[in-house]
Image 1 (cartoon, rainbow, N blue to C red):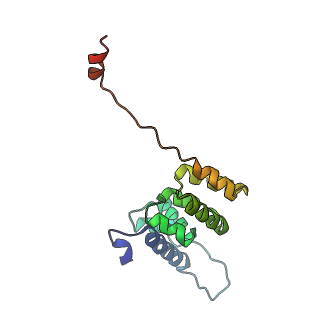
Image 2: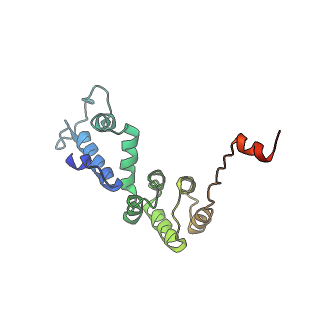
Image 3: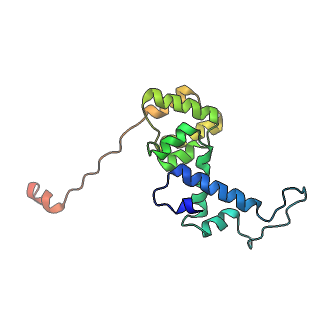
Length: 164
């Protein structure tokens, strides 16, 4: 509990703290030594995630995203902690099987690139379809187009050069 109160908390620390709290909430009120069915939820229809969100500054969905990070392999989670991989991209990559994550890690090392959110979603989709291989990873990661720079011109300034 006190660990979550720190100001600078790594994504992985927060993820594992929320996961432990959620596991504890899911076990609460249930005897694990018996094999009987659980009768019902104790918190007036709230899910454990909603209960946990009520005790923190995060939404239930955001808590689920943090917990999803715990499915990343250690080197990928380290990249998220170091902010080399964005939080959202890390969540998307967590849906890849561990073997796929290992392959992706090797490709990232070889190409010296980190996936952005759009690329992570493409990788996740290919992984879901069972079509993700190292060649596909290289193609997706190589498609790293920088965002077009936005240019704003004031009409007053334009009128100096192009009178109406």
